[in-house]
Image 1 (cartoon, rainbow, N blue to C red):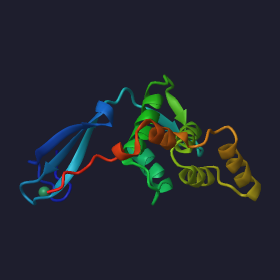
Image 2: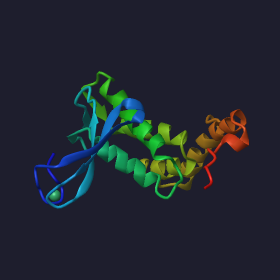
Image 3: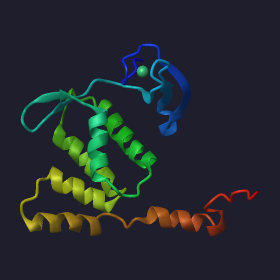
Image 4: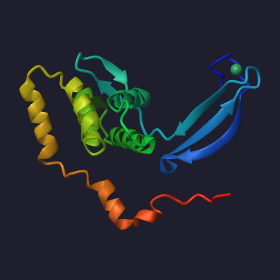
Length: 176
Ligand SMILES: [Zn+2]
């Protein structure tokens, strides 16, 4: 793997570990020439997916682009990176295994919205308002209606609290 800083071709792997429940291998690398450090990911790609954009243009599906559009929606929100990672992986897998040669960008947008709805309401509204290009305040109300209507309240963290007694929620640190 070529060094992104100096272009050196002799980078070394310092550390490898699996992430995303074993769906990817993450490698920390270091360049002996410039001491630059970077991370690479090794992932399974089941199939090439082509995205059909609204403009009619066709572009290869890009996981990193998907990730960054979700990151923008989640900016400054306290959401664990693993949850975002799982969402991105889940959407990617769905697209790769759908059997469709082309996926309209709308379909991906809907999948992202569905996923964000279950993760963070603010990110969901941010993404949806950009994605749906709202013009009327009513659009916004309709969207907020979907949050209070069909979507169950954010029960996940509460359920966890009930299941795990409070003192055990954080592993006690050994004091010196
Ligand atoms: Zn380098």
